[in-house]
Image 1 (cartoon, one colour):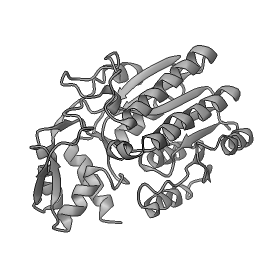
Image 2 (spheres, rainbow, N blue to C red):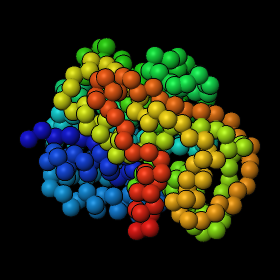
Image 3 (spheres, helix red, strand yellow):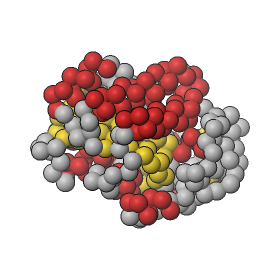
Image 4 (tube, helix red, strand yellow):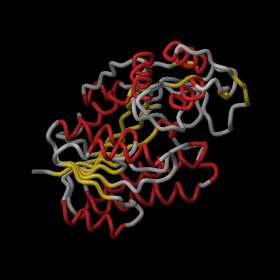
Length: 315
């Protein structure tokens, strides 16, 4: 039976991808170093959930450790790699740019080298809408210029995409790079605003709103993102970059109002200036995803936040 290697399987998107693959009867090997960027108990809970399924193997493994990765490739010989492990967070990357380069670029190159050596049939990279930088023209298209990232995180993700192209060009690896747009839902990261704002509103503590609340984001439900990723499994791309977003924008003020409706609590707001690395708007053109993958996001913000809140209450 063929094996799918998922990196970052203890994390938010990675755990959902692993779960969906296992429910399809796939054999899944995941590597995750349990980076302490946020509460390890949440990541450990994700792994415990996945261990309930047959065909699941987990390694506590850093993608920067090439020898450790090589041993896993040798043992399991994956036919497909879904690479979602990364140092996450735009603002945190301002403090630790070298670390973001080492993990997000160096770790990706390790995986590309091993994927090439073992002749994997498909390599999927989890990239980010942050590569588009600060722009007002929407929606963001894959053909837009992306030469002006405004954070080390964005630069590291764009660099990873470029290395993917190099490995396709030199070695004919079959690669798709997905640019994710503000993914949210159950098991979401504590540093992202769905989790952070929900927690603070429920505790009666003030939330920090950067700017006047007019900034806009394209919020994409994790289940929709997973459906897009799984649609790649038996396809040949050559090399493609594809947006996975909802193709709708929501202002920060509307997002806060939705949190209030879902939780039944009124938010206390403190306004602070917009950080330099934040962008005013994100919005995905998903024409390519619709055409190539049959991608059709079906979960809107309020429904998705309601599902997130139901999960949050079980924590």
